[in-house]
Length: 427
Image (cartoon, rainbow, N blue to C red):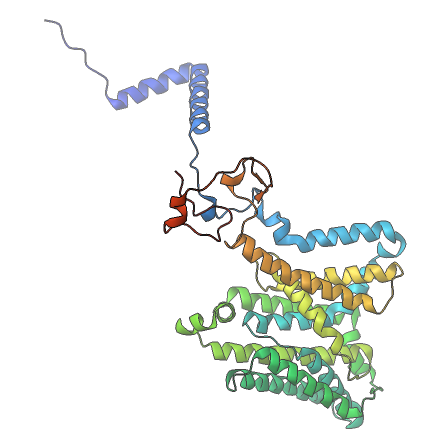
C-alpha cells in the first residue's frame, strides 16, 4: 500500500515560494512583470459604463479643473492685458512705478468693493455706497476745518453716521418691506443732497499733515491704503469662509425663506450686512478725503459702478460666488486695462465708464450663462450627441434624421419643447 503524499500547508508553501524567489530573483521580477501586464490588460479591456450626460456632473475634459478659464479667467485676462501693453507701450508699462500707481489709486476702491460683497452675499443691493462716501468726505472735512474738531473724534463721528445710514436702510427693507434696490437708490439721492448742502456744493481744503498721513503714508512707494485693504480683505476672507456667520450670510442670500425655516436669523444678517457696508463706505470716504486732501460732494459717485463691476466679475472666479480674492484681483485687472489705455494715449473721459460698464455686463451675463449651461438647463454638448448630426452639441442642418413615431407623440413621456429629443422613447 502506497503512502499518500502529504500536501504542504499554506505556511510551508509561502516559505517555499520565498526561498525560490530569493534564489531566483530573475524569476521573481518576471512574475511581477507578468502580473503587471495582466492587470494592465484587464483594466484596459474592461468595458466602460456609458452614463447619461443629462446626469453627468463633469462638464469638461480638462484634468486640472482649477486651471480652467471658466474658474480663473481673471488671471488669463491679466496675462492678455499685460502682454498687449508690454508690446504697445513698453517704455511706460514695464516699470514698477506704473504698477505701484495702480495699487495706490485703487486701494480705496478695493476696500469699498470688499464691503459691497457682504450685502450682495446676503441677497440685497446697496446702491448708496457712493453717496455714503461723498457724505462722509464732506462731513469729516466740515468737522475738521469748519468746526475745528479733533481728527480722531471727527473720524469716529463720521463712521457712526455711516452705521446709522445702514440701520435706516435695513429698517426700510425689513420692516417697511421696500425692495433693497429702490431703498438704497432713494437713500443715495438723499445723501448726495445732504453732502451738497453741507458746504453749498463747494469743496473744503486746508487739512494738516496729520490727517493727510492717514492715507498718504507710504512704504517703498506703496501707500498705507493698500495695507488697510489687505488687512480688511484677510479679515473678511476669514469671516466668509471659516465662520458659521459667513455660511449663514450666504444661506440668507441663496434662499432667504429656506434659510429662515432652517433656523437662520435672516433679518439679523441682512441688517448686519447693510450696516457693515455703509460703515466701510464711510471709512472709504475718510481715506479718499485724506488722499486727495479735500472734501468733495461728488467724490463718491465714480466708485459705485466700478465696485459693482469688480464684485460681480470676481463672483465668477475660483468658487462661483461672491468672494474676496476674486474681487481683489478683479479691481486690479480692470484698473490695469484702464491704466494701459491711458498710457497708450487714450485719455478720453468716457474710457473708465465704458470699460467698467462693459465689464459689469459681461460678468453678470457670464454668470447667468454659466448657471444655464452648466447648471442643468442647457448643454452645448452631450456624449450621446457626438454623432454626424451634431457639432459641439449643435444640430447641423444636414444629415439623416430619425422620424418620430405617432406613439411618441401620444404617450406621456413626449415633450414637444424638447428640441434635442431627450424624452423620445427609443424603439
